[in-house]
Image 1 (spheres, helix red, strand yellow):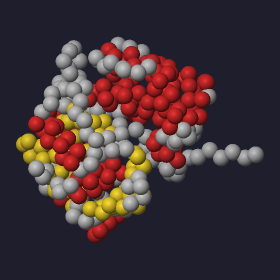
Image 2: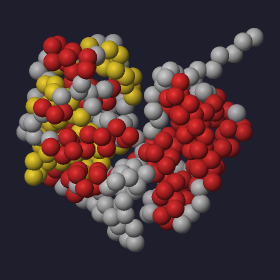
Image 3: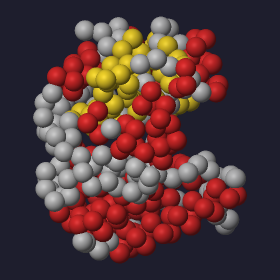
Image 4: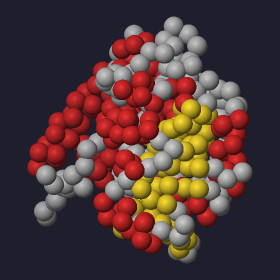
Amino acid sequence: MNLRIAIVGAGAIGGYLGVKLSLAGHDVTLIARGANLKAIQEKGMSLIQENGETLVAPHVKASDISQASQYDYVLVTLKSHQVAAVAQDIASLCHDKSCIVTMQNGLPWWYFHALPGEFENTQLRSLDPQGDLWRLLQPQRVVGAAVYPAAELVSPGVVKLIEGNRFTLGEPSGEKTERVSQLAQAMIGAGFKTPITTDIRGELWVKLWGNLSFNPVSALTQATLKQIAEFEPSRSVIAHMMQEAQAVAERTGIQFKIGIDKRIAGAQAVGDHKTSMLQDIENGKPLELDALLGSVIELGHIVGLPTPTLQTVHHLCLLLEQSVLRSGRGLTLSFKE
């Protein structure tokens, strides 16, 4: 069955999805702007694969979000802090049965939707200050996704895959519905590994656990994953951040299947890799602080648990972000002998 799919954000992950799903025969529209939009409209979208071969999707469509139609599935691949500004436009892409798939790092704005217990339907103001996402996008429309591939937009209309092809999908309720099964089958048919989980929040926490600690520390120190893990003082900070986050997550019913030392060892094994937040600092871009840190700190307030280390690192990162954005340029350390 061919699906009508809009992908909001034709960057690295959005472009990767768009090429593969279009070549699998689905009616795909990439929502883009500027030079990227023009390039896709003129030449289609290109994907440089891990083996160096290039796939071209000549029939993938591209549109400005204000001129797009309505779709069965709307995949949102923007960064978390970019979604609120286009929430009304995303809502306009939906018909009565449309499904919105959130593909952001960190905790999702719908975290407490369909989560039984005392916190059910609590809204996270760090992610949705005015409640616009909850009101306009409607949590009952949502399917969650944990995104594992790494890719980059190397030029307008061209994405390079670094590694990975796994996207885990899950309903907030944990049910295996027709809409999530249909999308999973479409993605599997396009060449992705797409398991369906009954615990999408737990899946998101697995990735977030590393991101909420290593990303901000790397931005503050300009160190790689390996350097942070091998330097005992910074490793200790990482461990404290993970301990606080784990306690908060467990209070909402999440169970961690690996320990902190094993999670740190996994990051260390990646080697001298610059995190996405460090790259954002170097390129003078805003940071995903609310999704990775602010939301976890807020979650701590909601469940009544202190997060002093997370708050300290968050405050320092806010100052760093402010300094970088005020300067109008990226920040890199230079060492003179």
